[in-house]
Length: 99
Image (tube, rainbow, N blue to C red; front, side):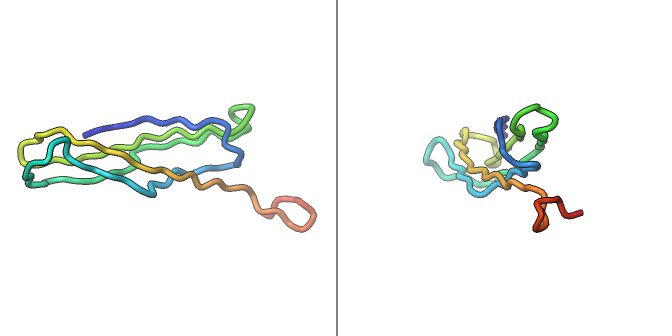
């Protein structure tokens, strides 16, 4: 299994959510494999609002991946794409938040 921790600073939204929008998994060598487990996922994430950071928001998350065969050999290569969904409060015609 492989893990990657990512931090993105200065997000200009009141709330942000990481979305896994693409990935690639492949074995390091080209030999016949009997795949037993495969996947890419976001394990954990946290968003600190601009009010908490005193500037832009901070999004941190961990992406994990696994490509395992019957004997866990050979190693595998993993890449991913994460898009950030940024959210702001709705405002009425006068610029006040809708509750």
